[in-house]
Image (cartoon, rainbow, N blue to C red):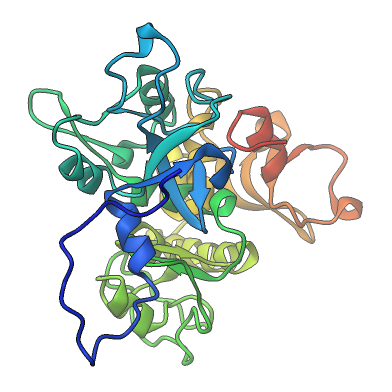
Length: 329
């Protein structure tokens, strides 16, 4: 089995050339041939050496699959790819892989495309004015499912590079400025992103973690507790700006929950009415999403059982994500 990256014109070696630790990650953008056993199969996709990828170029096992090389698969739950074993191609960049295989135009398989649309996250696909699919934003896909894709945090991943552990996620000083995107002003630590990390991500240096998660052209994954603390600080600032606590609203929930909660929020929008956010349902239990009139709430996975109020029906984040098919059991 050939597992080398797509061949490129060779460049003459130079005495000053240095090994590039990201060369493999850059090659994966255009596509790399693998065996299906080389991939980590996840609830939301596949991963190769820590890098999130989609797959295509599955070997034809029947005449009915003729011409299916360009059909790409995004979800391991896809009936075509779920039990596949054999040679395939993997890539982390829809546009780059498309340019590398111009004779086999890449198109999502219908099952996987329905899966993408069912997530109800607008940034995952792009279309032209005629409704034709022009791009799958794999970076955004990895962003919103980062907690299922990556094994460690805090983490920084930019397509074309290997995932990197982050030593300093937040600015070391208490931020004395308003976020350049949301204009929230929080005089507290562990809220504003490290300016060097912001610069690497192509976003303003004075920015909060919540805006950075959504705006960076990179995946910035904070520890779950740190992301929730930054989110609650932003929500408190928003409440002060408004002069009162916002009414139950899906729009507010989308704005203030950490990025890792967004797929769950989008899924719940089709099932339930709008929630309140960041509500204390007992002295030490914070409900991230809450429906007080129904006595229902969704809490973080690390909340203690002994402090959960009995008059509430409680879901933990991982539990409800499993029930809705957003996470493997």
